[in-house]
Amino acid sequence: MYHYGLDISATFAASGGYAEIYAWVCRNLHSTVHFRRVQQNLVVIKDRGILDEIPKYHPYSQMLKNAPMAILVCGDEQLQKYKGYWVQDCSAATENILIAAQAKGLGAVWLGVYPTEDRVIAIRKLLGIPEHVIPFSLISIGYPAEQKPRSDRYDASRIHRNKW
Image (cartoon, rainbow, N blue to C red; front, side, top):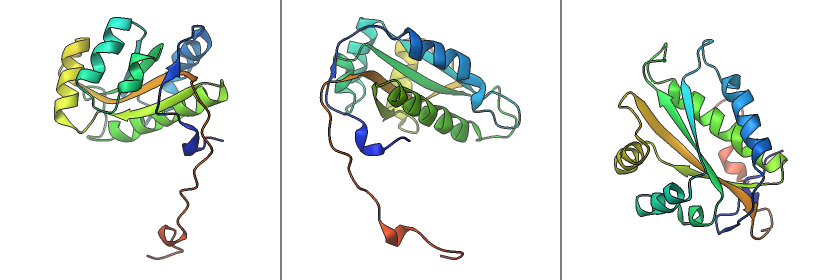
């Protein structure tokens, strides 16, 4: 089970050996399919120069300076059957990657890109992403530099039964 409090948003200890998570990503890209149509693309980023450049454009991505890899999840407007559903597919793909990372003993942090236009434009330019492809989320992946206790964010007032 994925617990939100286990993400470490500080720094990651630099370490290699991500072949397993990379292979998982490649095998499971198509696991989040809406109307039998894959609507997302992934960019696996391991280039140190690129990882170091992203924090200049994304204020919450400082951990990338120490992370050995990141995965950018992108929606492709040319592949969507129904307008706008790429957002759900990209959200599901992002969550699946977070779950897989934790299952492998890795730390992962979901960094929002879309719908913040300046982040979308900067990431698109940095990685050479075409206009019909929308950078949605960036996931920093590495071995956690520390373990934080699980935070309890449960709020019973946010759960409604049958009606609002």
